[in-house]
Image (tube, rainbow, N blue to C red):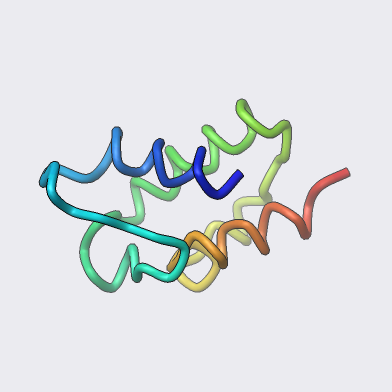
Length: 78
């Protein structure tokens, strides 16, 4: 799951091909992704992993790092 999330973020949102991200990279506060990117990520998570994240959980805190995104996904896995 971690690798798939990183690959998606790199492909969709990271403009610098030399930029590296890992599970602890600050995604939002560093400017790599924004609030509109969260909407896209939520849709990707639903499609790829079959996990529906409620709108109220699509927050900066829940999407700041790959680790936080995985925690959020796991919270709503069936």
